Every structure is written in C-alpha cells, then in structure tokens.
Length: 270
Ligand code: ATR
Image (cartoon, rainbow, N blue to C red; front, side):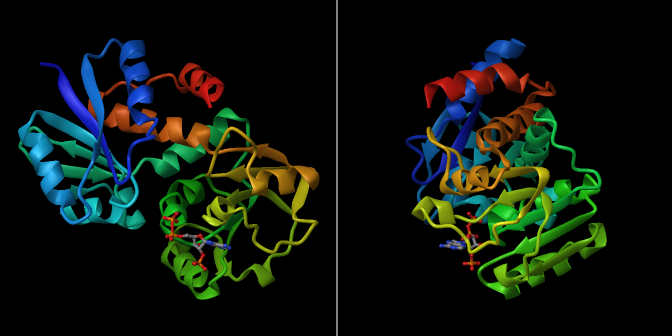
C-alpha cells in the first residue's frame, strides 16, 4: 500500500489539495495517496489518530483546525510555535506527531516567483488574525525596511507587532495610522469574502507597488480591483496555496515539487 496523506477541514468538499498533491506525486515519481477528510468539529485529535492507525503518514490542516492541530503535536517547528497554528502534520518514524506551518513559506515563495523584492521593501499587512500571524516570520526574515500591520481592531495589530518585534522593524495599529507609500500591501483580512474593503487612503502604493490578496477566485478580488485602479500590480493567493502545498510535500517526501506547472493548470481550471 502506498503512503497515505490527507487534508483535514470542515467543510472540506471543495479542497484543491488532493489535485495539487496528486500532480506533485506524478511530477516527482512518488507513490502516495492523498484524500480530503472532513474531521468532526469536536474531535480533531481523534480523526488524526484514526488516520495514522490507518496508514496515514502526514496531513495538511485547514479551517477550523489549525490551532487544535498546534495543540496536539508532540514537537513543533519554531515557525509553527510562533504562528500558534499548524497546517502540516508529520508522523515521525517513532510515532510522534510533528507540526509545522508552511503558509508563510508559500507566500514568500510566491512573491519571489513573481519577482517581488522583499529586502528593503516597505510592507503593509492588512488584518491581524490567524492568517496574518502565520506568515509574519518568513516575511520579516526576508528583511523588509519596515512592516506595518493594520487592523480593524487596532489592539490586535499592536499585540501582534509586539510578538514579532524581535524579528525586525514591525509596528501595528488601526487603519487610521496607515500612510503610504508602500511597495507591497498584503490583504490578510477576511473582509473581501464579504465583498468589503478596509478604509484605506488612495495614495497607498509606491511607484511599481504590488497588491497581494491571500484570497483567490476566478475573478480578481475586491481588494485587487481597488488596488489595480490605484496603479498597483495585483497578485492573488492561488500561488500561495500551491506554494504551501509544495513546502508540505517537501517535509513529507524530501522532494521539492515544481510549483509553476501545477499552478498554471489550477489557474485554468478556476
Ligand atoms: P483568519 O484565520 O482568516 O485570519 P481570523 O483570525 O478570524 O481569521 O481573522 C480575520 C481578520 O479579518 C481579522 O483581522 C479581522 O479584523 P478584526 O480583528 O478587527 O476582527 C479581519 N476582518 C474580518 N472582516 C472584516 C471587515 N469586514 N473589515 C475589516 N477587517 C475585517
């Protein structure tokens, strides 16, 4: 029987992860099976245990289980510890569960693929929830000139900035403290799900500035449309999705898949 992997979520019906990992397996010649499992809301740990008994070697974890996955791990990477969340579970040879988070690597990898220079950049991050916490360490490690976290609830952005202050020039506040120009603005709020936009000044972007939305869809998001009208180049989060999957695959199989062809195919299927 080939090694088994899965993605846990609730709901999980529309997950693209099985198709992405099937493509990675074909590309790298790895024999593995990858399925989507809807874990019960009240027993995520039980679902993971049952999967390992059934031959499961690792899993991706998505909404709403990332924090619970973090709690059940025997060991955590420094990234996962800092993120307070786990999107990748690995069953080690000794039966211990190791947790990591690859979302931030997926984001930074996608930005690099798109030739966005992070070193020395003035970065604005919108939102201060789990999605943002999960990407701050790799972003700050890329040595931006400054990183401002702006959030509807200012206190959450301030607290998040304080948590990561040892890694670089990072500040937090409400949307009212936002003053451009920024080289890169990353939307990590769930506002665009509701078709909402945070209140932002029109002169947000520097010349050649980039807008990145962690969300994606078949059409540009509200945030990317708004940014495009203000001269920014827009990138959606599909590359981050495929990128985080590639980093998880590397943790499990020791091989780094090529993101580009899988991303191209996924884009055409949206
Ligand atoms: P996730 O795991 O997706 O980050 P979360 O932890 O609930 O989810 O965080 C959601 C983020 O989107 C928060 O930063 C939230 O702002 P608050 O901290 O003020 O709640 C932000 N958000 C959600 N809806 C929003 C809206 N309509 N306008 C602006 N920000 C919004």
